[in-house]
Image (tube, rainbow, N blue to C red):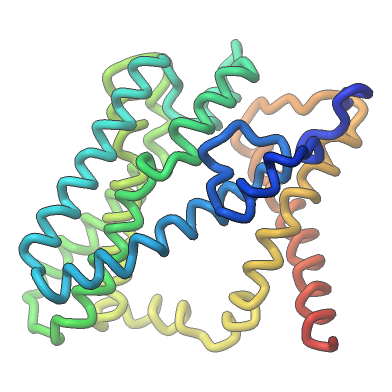
Length: 277
């Protein structure tokens, strides 16, 4: 299933890849050397911006909030513009489920411009920064039952739109462009509102479940899970005798569960080895 000349995807490395990985800028370049490290690069870039954003929020909050709103809107405009210029589908999954599929070159462009580009994702990050800032400076206030119910419904509606809206974003339509440009931002808003409701005591049962101390064990495995999941995924793909043909969302669910269980096991081994040594 792999090229005898070029080797397995993810292992084609050269000297240029070293400095890109060390400087956490690999997401700006076409990368076939451990390409899953794009997320670590993106996270590092956002964490470098976070102190500046927090400093502005605590010193000049009005200006900082205005700047963050401008960045979020700019991110949406960028995603819409790129989607229109390249005629990208709404999501990777929707493209793979279409009968005509998606060419490898087009998938690489979509990954570079929409998936791994910081300007395409920074809006969601800033929403999280705003939420943390608001929770830290605002004391608990009394809200009416109607206000809380509206907030619950809005959170549920935004999360549902982000999850299931792709089913209706078929082809190159106005809705598909709107969905591609906004679904990450809308998901972040819905999730932020959900977290706010939990933190303010308006969803006590869900909060008690999410705050269960046994989740700490799994949180400590998250980085090992991240490091191991892509090699496991590549092994599953490249050792098959036939190409993967995705005919339904259920296929992705079962495939993801298989990868997740095995990656979690490997992450546990990594954590055990580190703790023992």
